[in-house]
Every structure is written in C-alpha cells, then in structure tokens.
Length: 113
Length: 117
Image 1 (tube, each protein chain N blue to C red):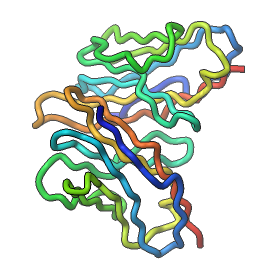
Image 2: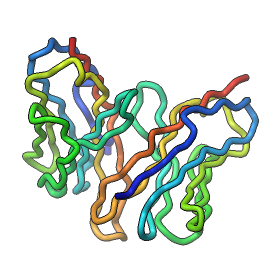
Image 3: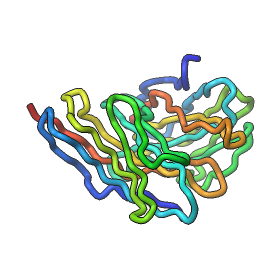
C-alpha cells in the first residue's frame, strides 16, 4: 500500500533562514504528490503539487519542492522563512487505483525571531 | 465558488447522543472525502464517495459511524451513539477526479471540531 513518511515531527528555524521539510513516499508508479499547510484552527491549504514533467515545482507563498524518483522523496523548501510560515505541513500522495489522498503525519514548523 | 462548506464549525455533545456533521462540496467535483484528525492518529481517511456512491469505507472506525451522500451537493457523517474518544476535528474535502486532464487535488473545508463529553 502507498505510504508517506515525514521523518521530522517538528522543526524550529529562525526567521529569514532557509527551510527544508523532508518527505518520502512508497509508491509503485509515478505518483501524484502534494504539500499542504494547515494553520491552527484551519483546514488544509494546498501549497503545491506534482503530477508530471519538471521535477522542481513552484508553489504559493514562495515554497518549492523537488521530486526525486531515485530517492522516493519530495522535499519542500523555502529560501527565507517568515514568521507567518509557522504551521503544520503535510506531504501527501495519491493512492493507486483511486483518487484518495494519503497523508503523512505532518511536520510542525516553529519560527523564532 | 465558496469552497467546501462544513457545518457546524464546533459541536459539543454528551456521550450517547447522535451527532450529524454536514458538508457541501465544491460544485462540479465528483469525489468527496471525510477525514478525521486527532493528535494521536493524525489525518485519517474515513470514507470517500465518487458520484455520490461510497467507494471505500474501510477507514470508518465502527458501526457507530455512517456517511451518506444523497446528492452531488450534500453529504453527512453521523455518529450514533457518540463517545468521548470520537472527539476530533472532522474534515470534508472534494476533488475532481475525471480524466487526468480535469483532475484536481482535494480541497478542504474548515472542519468541524467535535467534543463529546
């Protein structure tokens, strides 16, 4: 079965520093991959998605992610973090044979001044 | 479109009572998903529908949980009887799963925070 692993439960970075959130997936074919962000008390908002083509995907709020098939990874990056980026981030993959989305456990990002 | 609309936003109920959560998906979307989010278990898929038909309900925890989608614009998730361990945030999401050309990601509602006391 498809699965998504986010090895970091939480990460703390300083405002203005760069960020990389890790995501590894298990999938037998070319996956559809997503990163969502959830602010406290809110629903999930899509940051970016990868369906096919260019392996470097640009998203909203200055985020990008790179699909690396050889490493089964889809890490999220941002060159300079803002305090408003503090939230929980979820990596997700589309399940085979259907359209349900399987989510990782999430990584909570803390931003310090 | 107003997005996925869930009601109520918050629900507090006593153990043993029936609880009904409601969802209006985005117009034109043919997939609807119910998720539950807790600190311990994260985001779990409970059930999803395609064209109003339940496709996979393997995530529904017990027979106390049931979900319906009587038409393309409305779905309910019912818990009867409710228990304290059902306390969680329940999200509804919808997507367009047509052919790959019209496929979209899942769009989420704001969630219903359920507290069973």
